[in-house]
Length: 307
Image (cartoon, rainbow, N blue to C red; front, side, top):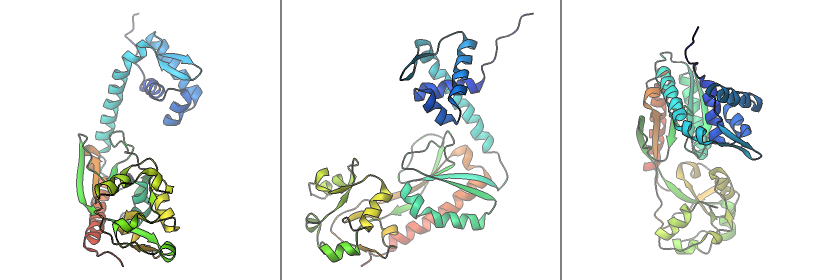
């Protein structure tokens, strides 16, 4: 008796995509939380079922064959369709309970969100909060987070965004540094001081240039790109630095330095996938974040520089 064509299992396609995009079984296993032997068996099963070779195996990993390359776009479209189904199904949950995953920059996650999350927990004890601190842009479409706190407005389709206000930046130094080196009186005077810079990030250099002062990466004798480490270096007295005033003004070990430099503002945006935002628990967390973060922005907007 004749049988119809076999259905390709999604787990096999998922394994194919992970190996194709990561280039090795070990990297794909970390992404999927599976074992290398399992992924190897799934790749072989997909090849046997389709009757084709999908990968070239070599010492450094896996590379797609011509056939594998031709199937990649269709597999990615299949993944997108499945995630679309998952998103809309998740958006239908009615209970005001369960997990909500929030992603934000490391600086915001460490210094600004903990008291906000404490308020969330007090008001909605049945909602569990998963905080994902990262300076990388998490993919809301693939459920890496339910809500993102961004310092820019995302432009992807199907995302709901809400502008909450601006956070201001200031210039700060540790009291021990000021006691040792004094306080610069002007932006030009700042050039004779130690300033903590970024390593590969050029934002501070560009900021100086826009204000009419040319500096190079080598001028900064202490450099780091990690925001929390940057703030810690300033607090330790390694030099003068730039940071969010809402954080710096709270620190009793820091002195704010008013100088004639125009510093950018950091816009605060909330972002979520349109389907997920309709979930009651996500909507509730969204509303509380709007209230708490907007109040924080408003408070900073009207606060005078410390000094």
